[in-house]
Length: 173
Image (tube, rainbow, N blue to C red; front, top):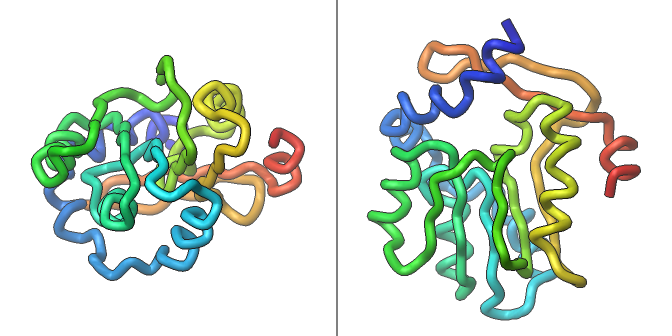
């Protein structure tokens, strides 16, 4: 079941993009973490938001703070909403696991997206993060607090989450 749910993440968000938009809190509970991330970036820097969803509220916060943003998401419906709401930024419909770009960014963030990848896919993301970074780039991602997987639900469907042990993340980084 977990393996099937992991494979269905992109289709789940595509299918329920409107429901996600309705449920996503407009209260930026992540603000203290996002502010720590911003402190690591040059003013007006370029952020890559990996798994950006519809741009609410994370990308919106960065844009409002004067940053240039490129958002990537595997859901075409999410990208269409982000493009409609924030037309001056760049939005790319693409699976993060296969992202290849000829540029680097001041900051890379994978908030509430990275933990939907399987553990092996998470491990495989770190060379990609490195390729999209330059010296001094910041990386922030959400993960669990221990090694393992967990199942939640969204719109009545299974929602997969996975994490490596913190020690493994530190070793990879």
